[in-house]
Length: 94
Image 1: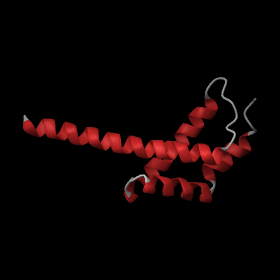
Image 2 (image 1 turned 90 degrees about the vertical axis):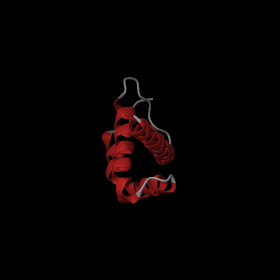
Image 3 (image 1 turned 120 degrees about the vertical axis):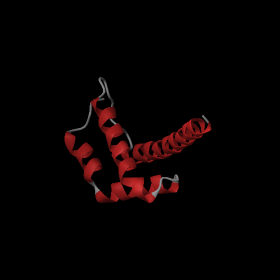
């Protein structure tokens, strides 16, 4: 299975409805409004990385793939925030 011609990937990266859907998933995942565009960029980057990987196969259901990746990005945001708070507490306690 090869990669589809660049049109499908380009459409996923620029489609306004898809971007709104990804932002919605990020917001439901608890990402603050002011950071939704950053989250969208992370999802787009992961799509590009997945497509550029050697031997990458076609993504069967791109919308579902993007939804899963967006939810993972939201989880990563929470982990990063918890890590930052723990670091802040350690620095303050010194």
